[in-house]
Image (cartoon, rainbow, N blue to C red; front, side):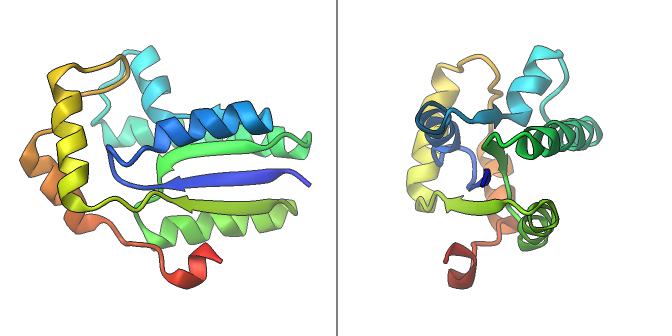
Length: 148
């Protein structure tokens, strides 16, 4: 049975590192909204275009899962409602779901983001402290029942 991997965490938590590891180990399809936006020369902060890319990636994911291929979504899944929706979608397809929460302290996250800001790799944008703090305030940590 194919598996849908949902990677949950804020910037700097290690989502891409884990996704690339799972991609190799599971021979899975990895879908990263940031990489697609970057490749298409779209502002990574454009919420409407980010939502459109996420929708397109879900259609690709659906097809891959139907073909028996594991899929990794690097969306971050900051909100419980979003995680619930994707679990529901996976259930409707009859596939397994694994939520991977990259639980990193606020101070460590900021240190990683700040270091990355100093030498930005492709498909990354500078994140200032105010934006980071705002995102931290929005983030809904997964409940223990979500991680079972």
